Image 1 (cartoon, rainbow, N blue to C red):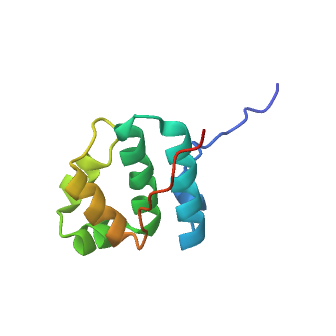
Image 2: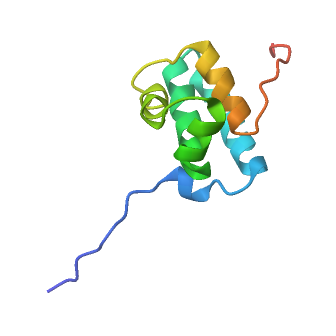
Length: 100
């Protein structure tokens, strides 16, 4: 009888260890998200989980529960929440001229 293969759900948060990896991941998400703000919120949630939601929530001045809701990817969070979370993650948002 063949052995059953056990699989584990892949979680990007387990692979985001350095600020550089986190920034590169967010940058890649910006490139593919288009106008999907909820997708970016989910990416910020992945990074927040990698850093520790409790600490990120504290640094952002938000409750842990509201942070989970805002970054679930089910909806687009308010822009002020995004700015607080980005700062709490130790990241920066930058503007560049559009290509093309």
